[in-house]
Image 1: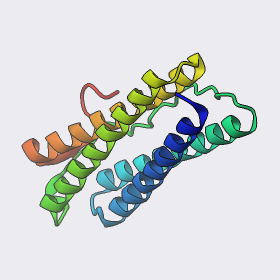
Image 2: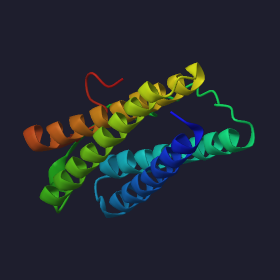
Image 3: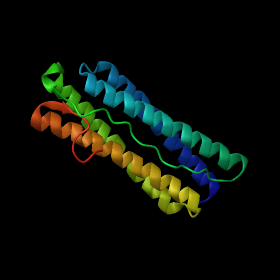
Length: 163
């Protein structure tokens, strides 16, 4: 992948991360349940972190032609707690928000995986692979929240398998 194509792809990825961060911040505002609010606040911060990482990468590529190292970052998980979803007055709209968020995360995961395959630089490949893994983790967290809300009627986050 040529550098101009990569820089264009980074701009699109940055915009997607910005939109995701704003979308999650808005979702957090409408959540009545503290566990749901915390989940979307954390996702918003995480996507903001990705935006900053991509901005740093874009700058490095433009100025030096170099990729930057991304060591990865742990998603902060709260203590295990279960709260009845009935606390959420608009449960069906919350489930829709989570479903939409899952779709965003799946697309981001695929985009970064595709970029990892196209980049020949080992650091670039590693960076995009790790970003894809981050987005997969977000998807799994949201998927678990979706499952517990629709099947158990509770906000249960974290849940088994996401520790």
